[in-house]
Structures are given as C-alpha cells and as structure tokens.
Image 1 (cartoon, rainbow, N blue to C red):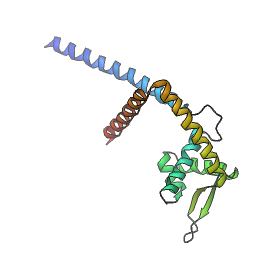
Image 2: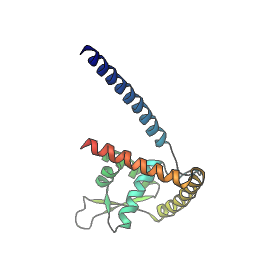
Image 3: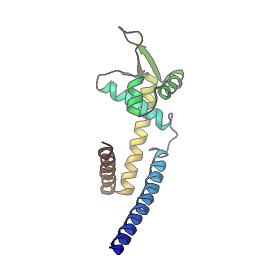
Image 4: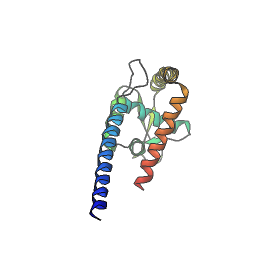
Length: 161
C-alpha cells in the first residue's frame, strides 16, 4: 500500500514538473509572438494600432460602425487604452471621431483616407512577407502551425468555461 502511495506521489511530481516546463515554454512562445512583425519594412503603426485599425476596417467592411467601447472589448484592452490610441491616431490624421446623428454622446471611430492608404500599403507589404514565410517554411508546415494554434486557443477557451 505504501509503495502505491510513493508511486502516485512520483507521478504527481512528474506531472507538476512537466506542467511547469510547459508553462515556461508557453509564456516564452507568447512573449516572442508579441514581437513578431509580419513585414521587413518599417511600419507606420505598432502592432496594437494595426489591430485597432483592422477592427475599424472589419466593421466598415461589414457595413457597421464601431465605438471605442466595442474596440476595447474586441482588442481585450481598457477603454482608456483605446482612448489613448485613438487620440494619438486622431492627432496624426489617421482616424476621426464622428458623432452619432441621434445621440451626440456616441462617437464612432472611422478611418481617414490617409489611414486607408497606409493600411493598403502595410497590407501589401505584410502579404508579401507572409508569402516568403510560406516559401521558407513550406505551406504544409504553415498550415499545421495554423491548425495547432487554433486547437491550442480552442482548448484554452473550452477549459475556461
């Protein structure tokens, strides 16, 4: 009986060590991914700004308008952080706040023509870079990476429920 307990304790310790090793590797991977830019060219925008502009563009493509609260939710950041980004981009002529016709307290965030030109330029550069990634890694490995990333994210989200 005592031997079984010792074996169970060793298994538990091995599981804890394995989990701790995975935790370190996952944190390292996520940290490295934060710094990944999908272009060699110097960007007009940082990664957070590109994500914000992308959300505004997605809303526009679907025929909708977006407010800062929605941006905060979609980006997983505070409204204050969105406000700071929007203020900066607005001062550069990249975005504009457009008041709602009915409720003047609501301000939609929209892209300027300057932003659309920059975004188009950035998108072209990123697509070319992604093409080079696919050439170097191989499409099969890149597809596997996408599938495994999706599976990882889905697993994490399901375990949080």
